[in-house]
Image 1 (cartoon, rainbow, N blue to C red):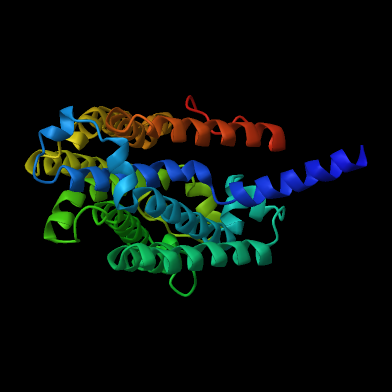
Image 2: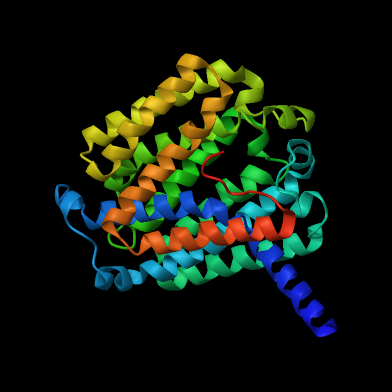
Length: 325
């Protein structure tokens, strides 16, 4: 009995240190990364992106798997650093309590984040120099500047928005450079993704508005309120759709086109209850498109989702993550 108890406790600690990386946020990271790869793969044949599947041989070539793994570890470290800095607002918003409630001490959280970030950036240079530079830029702007004082861009309305837009650019570009060099075309094709990421970020500042105010954070929703936030998010959504048509990114057409009604609904009704769909639909639709092109991606999504659901239910008796809420 004692041995079983010890093994259970060890497994629990390991799970805590894994899930503190917030693997539910790996969904958007993986999806934008793979869209960068797919756009680069079909760069000169946009119509083929609709009909042609990506073969397993293509996936294993060009270090896609290793690059995606390192990006996952890097973002996991960034997410941990963000939680360490957001203890007060996380307590007020009753979320992300592994660090906020002291289940994982700050020292060990910082240690884990450092190992993940340094290891991922260092290793990425051995895959491709451009990839290493993009990973370094992602950490500087979406990790260090976003979370760490004296910058703390997450606490500022426009700097927080700018940081998330850059994160979209760097993650998309990380997928792109696996097939082709970074170029002006990379920036152009990433524009619809940057706008979509920015729109979703604005929506996410609304549910946390109360707790952020308590913590002294001046996010976009705190400074400008619900109406101005959803208005700008709708503008970004429209911009993403226009960019999709202009650059003939047919893979992005379905997600932007079918996400827009949810953006409009939030703006028209001004009801917070509709925010859930505006936040989740873009990334869900993008993921669906990738599953059509790369069917094995569905396996990773299901494993990630149900492992998180099992963990939060067993560990904290929470129904999280939930598609319906």
